[in-house]
Image (cartoon, rainbow, N blue to C red):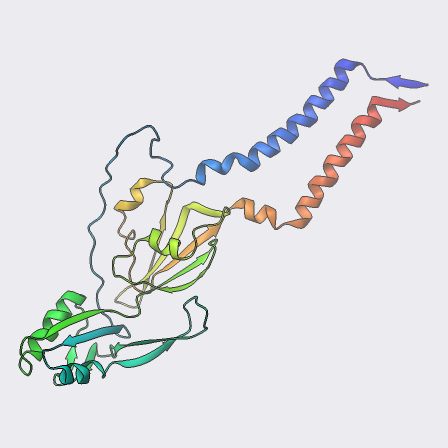
Length: 273
């Protein structure tokens, strides 16, 4: 004898089953709102102004590598002045070769560099503009009308976590935002938590400051950490979807559970007595 479950009960069972599946799929997809940058920016607005924090030039510290060039009207003196740049090596730039040489003056533990004609000069605590003016005043005692240019040769930022190309990058300018660094690293993957990006920064008293930035909010532009400093670390934490996608056992369990539920529905639909 075969017991036929009434259609109303069967429909109820099927509705419950598919409701569970829909809820699961919905929970898996409801994080889309956290994927776009500036999610709080209305897409219907024609123009919106956001007040950004004023940019502050980074300060020269010991172990910084400075590119210093001094131009004069005498080509021979210019060559002598600029040939004194030491050549250091770095192996942390993503490129076709594993190592790249970077010329520059290394700031020693006393915060000083040694320049031709001038000798040792203290630059620690200065911006590059202040250092340029200091060097210009010192070299002018020996050379007429020098033109001094100075910049960071090792303005490096490390980007880790859920980005396309995690690595340490040498930035070409001093005015570097967190978006510049993420752009260098190929942007966040779909699994990166845009609402919780960690920035780690060295301080002058041998401590590290850590702050969380929300890329979904335009208020990030008002954060003191919107502009990066040399040696900053940007870490993008993976979201729950990444953990779920890499949990093979969990995925297998979901598949098995769905199969068992389907079999139970069929079994209870027609039970042999």
